Length: 393
Image (cartoon, rainbow, N blue to C red; front, side, top):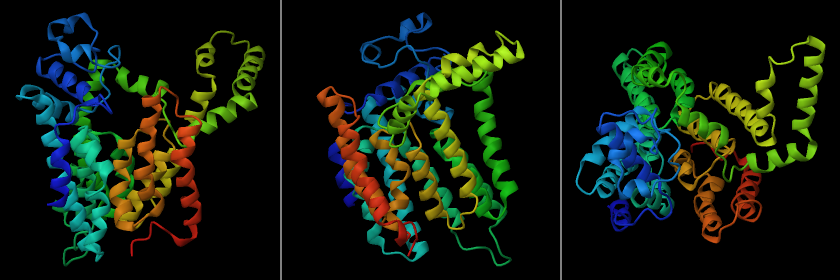
């Protein structure tokens, strides 16, 4: 009840902190009109009949959608309803309350105090970014919590999980991936923890493929909006911001360009590798290094035996490796941090709100906002390292 009362007053808030909800409803409108939001950006002439005041307030009108198919389907439902923004927020709030209920169930399954769930259910950041701003991440987080709830369910008498439960977990994992791509990184870990990895992966990947292959076919490859996001988006990344500046100071990009020049002279292949040069700049090189660290985090997660702590560690490491970290990205770490009472991540849920000062003051996050947000977080992370803060006890 407290979680509901915290969220209700936030439903009427206009999308002032984030305009993502406007893009959700536009993409939903395009899909509902039978057009393809993965191929057509909002500024496409073919979509001119759909333009109105919503379109005039859209950000990034030159970029097609980056959201997975289940999210776009949910957007299209909200776009058809009266009062679309409020309708969308009501749906998101329902999913958020379901996530709170699942978190409470997880606490009971683990024998933890129910009060720990309040660190998520009553967290102002969660309420603000969910009910207030309507971020779609809530759908993926609720699906992830449902998956882990099944993984922690009591095994059948013969040992292990029943095929039905594992298939259900795989289906929910697919739903999470199709709402927001982040859970895709947890599929290998969850599959191993299910005890029936082939069944889990076949179910999850099969459902994802059914939904994603038409998109890939329509865009002749990875959707262009997703490519643009991966290559060009960057904002307040905890490791990214200092890393790319370090690479720039070390002259990494010119050094690599020089190596490529020497290789071309040696191989006499003068034009074959010219496409590489535009990517030899510090920010992109930093993203490549962090992508490698993200891959290592996924591989390391295969050794996790406990789904709650394992999910928290994995999503936390991935967030630290991200070049873009908006406040609502913490949704992916906070449920697990609440159960573990992880001091650094719970503190970050308050500190991250300082990042809103950057656009409000018309300044870049680096260095002062970055330091205010991430400095205390890293200090807490180091100070509690030896206490094994992700241990569930």
